[in-house]
Length: 88
Image (cartoon, rainbow, N blue to C red; front, side, top):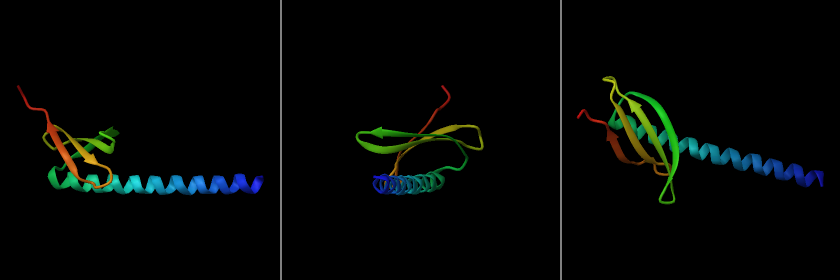
């Protein structure tokens, strides 16, 4: 019984590590894609589910103080939407 619990705990810990590492790769890909479009400080990150796909929403503040939002697919690292507020 103890061996089964220990084995299950090791497998669960290993599975969690793989999942986190995969997520980290997605964040890295998304940040690289965003930095190709705009430079600035990343001020917010949210992980969302859009139409069944894992998506990161990043907020960035550029050198002029403007805030930008980027939607990025976790698996591919592809930015598919960019928004910024404009003055009225």
